Amino acid sequence: MTRVANFNPGPAALPLSALELARDELLDFEGSGMSILEHSHRGPVYMKVHEEATALFREHARVPAEFDVLFLQGGASQQFAVVPMNLLHAGQSADYALTGVWAEKAFAEAKNVGTARKAADTGDNGRYTRVPTQSELDLDPKAAYFHYATNNTVMGTQFHYAPETGSVPQVLDMSSDILSYPLDWSRIGLVYAGAQKNIGPTGITLVIVRKDLVASGRKDIPVIFRYATQAKEQSLYNTIPTFGVYLVRNTLRWVSAQGGVPALQKVNAEKARLVYAAVDESGGFYRGPVEVASRSVMNAVWNLRTPELESAFVKDAEARGLAGLKGHRIVGGIRASLYNAVPLSDVQKLVTFMNEFRETHG
Image (cartoon, rainbow, N blue to C red; front, top):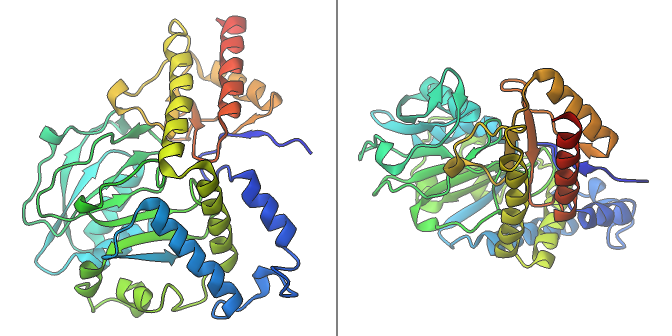
């Protein structure tokens, strides 16, 4: 078979080696006589996979010992509610930076749970073309936490600095750029990320949370939604999507083979440079709506002069084996998601197509 170049925003490209290993081991996992899909989530065969996935993530993300690493369910959208359910106590308020669709939804859920305020809002009639600067952040020094989405998949914007919030713990939605660059954990209270963009398939959500926040979390919420419950049970309070964790493990093995996060960061920067160069050097044929300083390395977005021309671009790209380039329905346009597992060679094919399409239709 011929695999296409996959630029989908999520579910997204997985490393070929991770998929090939799953194919080879599907019927008989490590001589156990059954698939990993069939093993008990509390049995020793699966537990070995679970523990390796946890250890590999800790290694690659350089997670300090004072944090718990949890494999949960429900996606980042569930964490929009679960974060304030755990961390936002009565009488407290939480700060939120509104920089895109998902940040808006997280803010709305927080207001359903307790008191939340806007610490920043860079939206203009639903369009977000940049992230706020440090000086634009209106921070409450007594906030329970400060929440922001590090990367905005729909709008194509990304924080390229870590905000200063003093003693207020930061909560990061890293669903679309987890493991794409190193983190300074000294600023962080909690990170959450759906796995389906950079670290695995749908169905798994990573939560990395400081143990003191786990211990002080609210007790007046359902047991299953308490971080303390999941931390105590090593994410196995209920039946976990075992195959999803297995594929996360396979993907993290691939990360090791690439040289870890610093090596991925270097390749990701080159992928983004190539795409944005094709946009900027097109003489206005391609138009990038995002301010240059806020451009996402993970999700490059651009427009053409008419929606009809954009549709032709997507159709012709698909005929060339370049999949997933249609922009989000909210903003339209074109979007190329350049996650960790998207090979540099596929991005080079995309740029070649972009230049040829411009020559034909410019």
